Length: 229
Image (cartoon, rainbow, N blue to C red; front, side):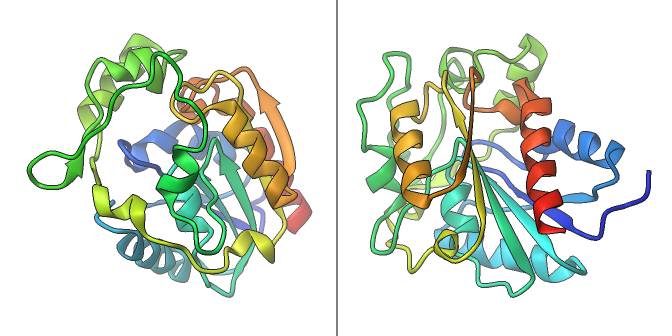
């Protein structure tokens, strides 16, 4: 299948890394769409936006940005000129003047959601048992173990930074609401998606559908690519 001119750049959320997009990357490749995962350090929101922008700069041609969870704030903060559309996967989308924490704590947490607190280095780690209980309850045991072993902690300061005018106010946007998400309540996701005036898809998936239900994510990304191209 010939390659599409539009490229996809994937941004992982907290407690993950680029490998969390493996199934989406290979699925898009089979559809003729090239995707790359931006390596976010999760050390601060400005650091993460800079890392994303370097990846987008490295990609030639029009780009569809895909952000998961915390990375919704990252993709929404880019000013890269070649970005044509945004896809939010169970993602947080603060508006101008809001922080990630503002929208993350907007709704009551799921009973299985872990209690989060920074360690002595001001880093927030996800408890190992939370991967099966809340982060990826629909994933295989193998995928849960891999997610836990490769998790990347997020700096506490990253979720307290107010964002500027978000890119979703100016670009076409898609949103996958994860109805069985135990980390970011579906109620919060519906609110954010409606506020963004996004093209909304819902599915009975957990917090990491790119791992546990990759075809659902791939279909939405391809929809955005097709609309952009």
